[in-house]
Image (cartoon, rainbow, N blue to C red; front, top):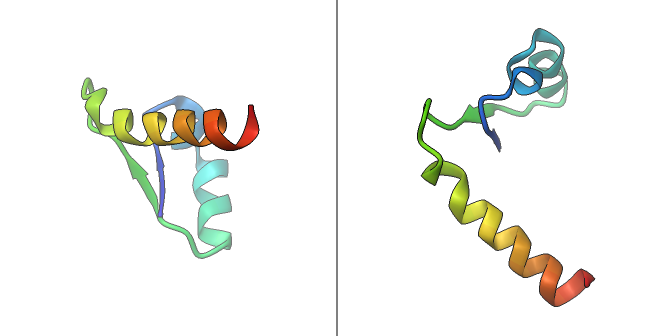
Length: 53
């Protein structure tokens, strides 16, 4: 499963075809609900802070 926001690049047919080609399922946040991505954004910030930077 690949979670993303509702950006046009993620909703495009070419992106959906890429996911399908690799056996992945797309998941998008609900419209106007920014909390859906908040947890993952915080996770990646922590990961970068502790391991990359």
